[in-house]
Length: 371
Image (cartoon, rainbow, N blue to C red; front, side, top):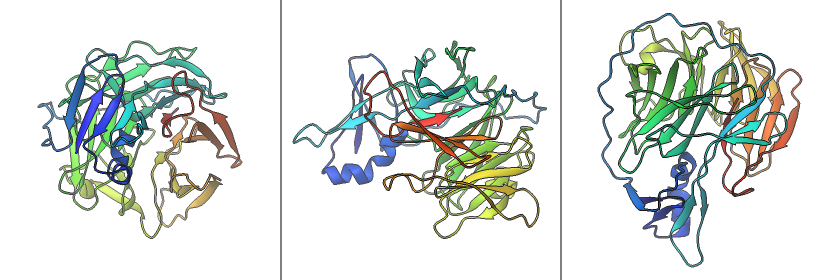
């Protein structure tokens, strides 16, 4: 299959049938978001060999800075939308129109501003993460055909306007491997990034934003890490391993074996399909999705899960929630269609808000969101 990127439209061609697109291309479409004004047509082959990231210094043990402290309930949401797709009549080619990431008002869903891109980044991808202060966000971006992903940090002003983006130096994701999870450390200085490994397996990478210094852990035990979260002190990483379960990674453990450095907290079994995980603000428990139920699990021996909320969603909703927990630990956010769902974990209530956009309103798949 050939993935054709155009600006503004993005086209997937050489597709034998419409059902084949739905089955074989859905993951690629949901992971991809690009934007730009270049008129030329450019192509990226999905059959390219895996690119090797540039040589970078190894991540050294370091004392983390104080966490960026929340000042109250979240005021802003940042969304990263996938391209909007449609099939012209009698065509086997899917036309994709990129949409930029956006800042929204957290209480109304209203549009505040598009997020600018740093020099060298031509479009945004779907991964977005937030620090506890609700002002510091991390996004990934596309740099062009046959090129790697780049990562950049954005700070919002008190009125929600994005400042100058800060590109992470040196560190590149693989151009044909956009990743499955992204997390920003509580002090806003490091990222954690998960990708599948070709041939089977998963990789988790931690990167210093100021220098690009990195460290990788890999495993062949599972191939998907849909959720990552930093502990409040920045010393541990919670992770969801598809088919493995919920665990905690200790970066202080020597070596590159992910399972050797991780402690399994809750095995994954049956129809338990977690997508997201977060630490509570005191670091004593994990909050995670189990289907459309949100649970809390204390990090102590023999603890049992506690149900915090049961979210009612339409029948066509995803089997499990991808969510963002705010810095206070009280408010959980997820999206479905063109709406935000704000869940108060103190009383289990849910408030639904429209997602206001300035381009292609009401179209496209659900965006990913962070606050």
